[in-house]
Length: 217
Image (cartoon, rainbow, N blue to C red; front, side):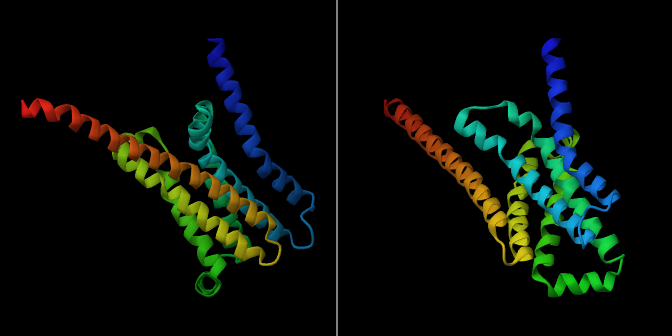
């Protein structure tokens, strides 16, 4: 029972930490502290946190691979949903506040400004992941298909990094840090997959070696 209470308390603490950036953006907007271009500043901050939490949601599996840490996996879904939440706020800020529902202007932006095209693609990749984040979706789709779909998160992260880099243009320090983090996460996952494939191949070879003399006899 104490362990369950500690688990709930930790989940509440993680939830509050994830929600804090949104609260700070809302508070700064309320008191007029978002600078000379408050809409752009709010959008930039929301987009930053969307990418931050998306990469953070990809970290639990590599951490398990490297250090056998399993506890971060409990928060992977929450982190992914917060990534979608910030991405949705970023999108709505652009769609409703920056462009004020001007569909023609938005379509021009999507077709002519490549960083917006990539940003829309990243958000579109996140949408099915958020919609299928429940246990019910896992049961309905089957774990294998569900897991395959949720590998879109890596594609969304890559598109998000490109969107960020093309958006800032000159000062690439933050996008490059995100790119480095994503490269490390992907590299660890690929190494783990390669090791699993080699282990499976060696296991099949061992089984054949064991069954060979029996079949000959």
